[in-house]
Image (cartoon, rainbow, N blue to C red; front, side):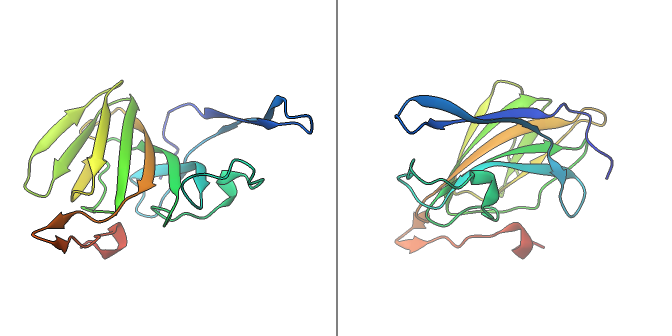
Amino acid sequence: MSRIALPPYRRIVTGHDAAGRAVIHSDAQFRPEPIPGGDAAFSLVWATPKVPVDNDDPVDGRDRNPGLTLHGGSVIRVVDMLPGGESPMHRTNSLDFGIVLAGEVELELDDGVKTTVGPGSIVVQRGTIHLWRNPSTSVPCRIVFVLVEASPVTVNGVPLAELKPEQAG
């Protein structure tokens, strides 16, 4: 996959000095890296091992390996989708906030309903089976996803199973 033509993003992390004053711990730029399959690039911004978050934890959240979601915690990542790129259908036990920064993305649900989402729009994804598709033939799409662990959705008292991308056909 060639690098997606979107600029790097800037991540600024704050913290405290020994006297308790607010300081900038890091200020750096990152580029999303291609994922297997080649239709998107991901970049982990931060992950926490639990919620509520321990703000005394000295680990840089980029140094964790959350997978798609982090059991008991939270994840924020930047996803750049190539024109025509598409994720597999999937469902996770998480509450996801998808914030479109550039381009457009199509959200498709398991019943075939499609909704196009553009810059400045936010999708609140609540444990449904869905996929993401960049409908453009020439413009990449950048989305920020914030994922927080959630209990499974239940229907008639039965929890719905996760369907992670590696499980999807």
